[in-house]
Image 1 (cartoon, helix red, strand yellow):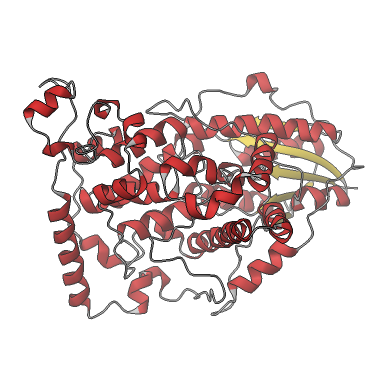
Image 2 (tube, helix red, strand yellow; image 1 turned 90 degrees about the horizontal axis):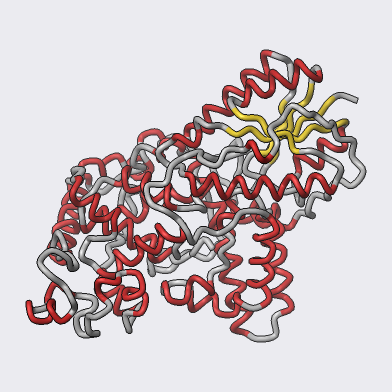
Length: 506
């Protein structure tokens, strides 16, 4: 039987792994992962993400060892690794899951496809989720497709396969620790690996999901109420299908209406996960260019002082700064705060969305390009949506952190400030500032802009732009490159509410 090479990418598990399952049926199998230094030098990747992946690889190696296989880890370009395997073992069939990543991974995959054609090596790719590739029809019932995909049986773990024991890979002790860079430390990062993900899944389905529906917006409750599964989904430690089926089973067994409603809300957000990745699959240019080209005419010049204040959590808006500092520490924060961070940067501080997107991508351990770029464009107005998602940082703080507990924990400069001024410290008198322990040299900054005035001006600018376009056509709203792209029918998927699309992933 011919050699079958399974190239692991962002699918670091053996459960419900179609590429592994099919390869094991076809012949002798070699399991490959390639550490690609070039990827970890990009502006939207970071060391915190690599360390999560590295821990997940250690876990994957143990999963494969239990099956009698060895994970062969190479470092460098994928095509070089494939060439080395061919020289050592002869021709092979390559198996992997499809990946909807950034432009770098797309170009990498094109290079792999070219290598396979040149060496007459078949490359079998399989769907990792409900994203459709290629898109062959003008109108597609995405919900029907997604529901059918989620209901398919899990691919079995191969128990009696023939594995090739290649000894040329790097042992774990030689896997690098310093790939990528973190401009700020991330001591609260979630640990990688399937075992960690399964423990979270069990605690969520067994206990934490009951509070999901009403607790995912506030940063005080979201840390526990959200599933926290997003990094394990992003790197494929858990299968999206197995999570969906587990949620459906748990919902069917739920005895309390509140429990059932929370699981129903979680399941709907799982469906939106694939919908947003489909957007990037269909419009890959949105990583760099606005979906609505006219939005490039908005007055949003890059201002280093404003950008540095935002990235360092010193904007003068307490909830914004607390959220940025929390995110830096944990590599995760709930969706409402993510949306507010984008809004405060692009609307309140009038910064362009591209550097905002890159900075946040580095901070997110659960960085998923197919969710990240559509969301940043949506929250910044770059996608031409009719709803302007402008967040008043005082209103948000009053609603989501009424006692200032979250703000005081993550902005220690404000711990001595009374409830009266905790969300508007710039209104404090000099005497009150002194009582808070501030000095002219050390204190808490005033906001760089008046957000009420800036938001009013931003609304007027957007209104004038839309009026000038009379109104944006469907093609313009999608972007020049999308004018001939297929549309997607999402009939049946519950639409996100006007509450800024609160589908916290996850």
